[in-house]
Image (cartoon, rainbow, N blue to C red; front, side, top):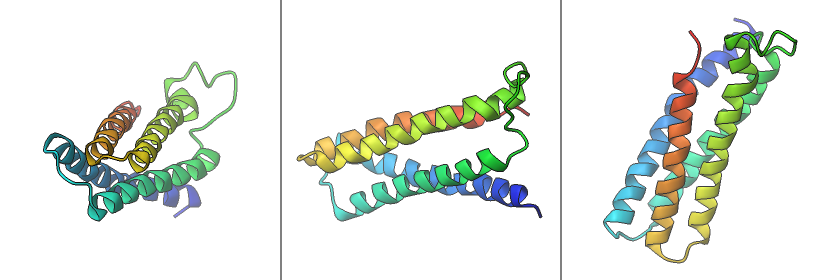
Length: 141
């Protein structure tokens, strides 16, 4: 197994952990926001672990970006949909998604009311997970 294939498989498999944690955080946030429930330590930890998993996935992606044969910097990169996707499109979508999830977590920490904490997580994590899903669905076959 090469270094590239190891990180590719790790990055690919770790996405399921990210998706599960973010979806769990989303469900709890919407239930808390719409059900006007208190924001407890369990919410805080789940939201934090979801954000940490997204950041870990990002670090794995950075490693892949520099060792992947699919990432190319040449005149032909933008003409080929596969190399364009891996060199430009994928990481841009993922950085935006990660930034949104991080902003949501930060806004949640700063909010005073439980409803505002849940709302920040619900909105920002939802937009982030939608971008992640779109980024995964656009992977060229």
